[in-house]
Amino acid sequence: GDSVTQMEGPVTLSEEAFLTINCTYTATGYPSLFWYVQYPGEGLQLLLKATKADDKGSNKGFEATYRKETTSFHLEKGSVQVSDSAVYFCAQYAGGTSYGKLTFGQGTILTVHP
Amino acid sequence: GAVVSQHPSWVICKSGTSVKIECRSLDFQATTMFWYRQFPKQSLMLMATSNEGSKATYEQGVEKDKFLINHASLTLSTLTVTSAHPEDSSFYICSARDLYAGNTIYFGEGSWLTVV
Image (cartoon, rainbow over all chains, first blue to last red; front, side, top):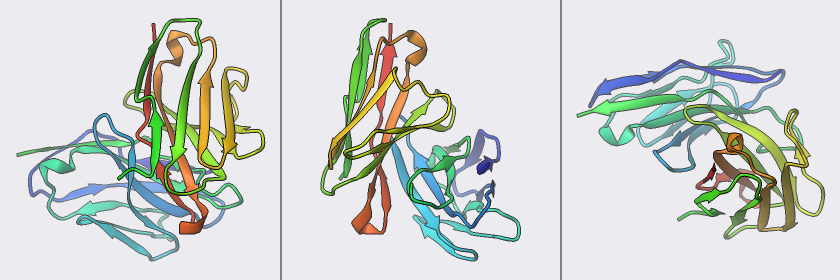
């Protein structure tokens, strides 16, 4: 079945460091891919998305490119801030009538120190 | 501001009682909403798809009689945890699909349930 696998955390970085959180997926078709962020005690916020191969989603300095050949959607940021500390979830929607029924990865906790 | 609101944000209930969580789309109509459950430091697991005017579609392993879902209007879905037990303690979060905004999915703020 469809699944999403994220790199295990937690990830701890110093401010201004480079961030990569790996995400790979399995799907029978060509899913839409998403990154969500969850700050402590809050719900999920959409960070960025890509709907087809080679698309690059970007927001708030974060980027991720939909790579069909490697079935990946790695999240990157060139210079992280303390305020980026949160849990990051990679997710996919595989299509069909139940649009919005997302499959999530296990989440990666990011902690950024000053 | 939030476009999907959940209420209550926090609830503590006694074992054996029932508790209702509401999910509202604030400025759009949502024919479809989704309920997820998240255990501490774990991922979100889809529980069910809530369809306006019809029965919810439950994921495998989710007890329909325990987690009652009602989607009586285009802006409100409710999740009722019946005869709650401590193992039902969790973070419940809903999402709603805005058909007229390119099927954009909005998540609620989540509801913490603690059963004592």
